[in-house]
Length: 204
Image 1 (spheres, rainbow, N blue to C red):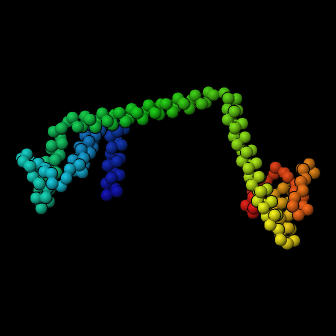
Image 2: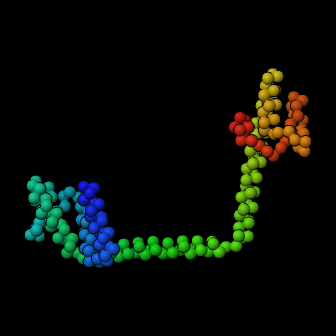
Image 3: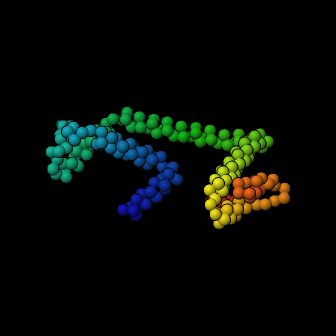
């Protein structure tokens, strides 16, 4: 089946390259008829009637034979072919969707060209906002780390706990001569710095 489908696809591509418009129209008509047939099939109840080749109503449930079912399908196809206005509506619907898609594509291309023409200096405000947000985020993380460290230091009960807090403090805020020194609980000192390691934050 896969080989048959591939052969059919290649044949359609060949017809398209050769500009065989009649074959394309025929294929489109078959597609519209199939869509209409599916709409008729799934849009009705099992109690509704179909038409026989002679034009007489016939229930689908009274078709035990496969041949009779084929006749019903043929009758449905014949009835659908007798309604060209439905095919025209499908054509108009598809044409409208294609036009909308082309308009959106042209609009995106125009917007992209306008963005290319924008002065790079005009984007400075956006970059400043991004850097400001990044600085606020870093200060918030630093404040959270300090708060957690102070909470741990207030719960110190032994020298081991104090040593652990001191080591954690040194990991969070490496000592530098230019950094301010602030006294902390327990007689220890804390050195504040804006440099904050991610590993230390995870430990906190």
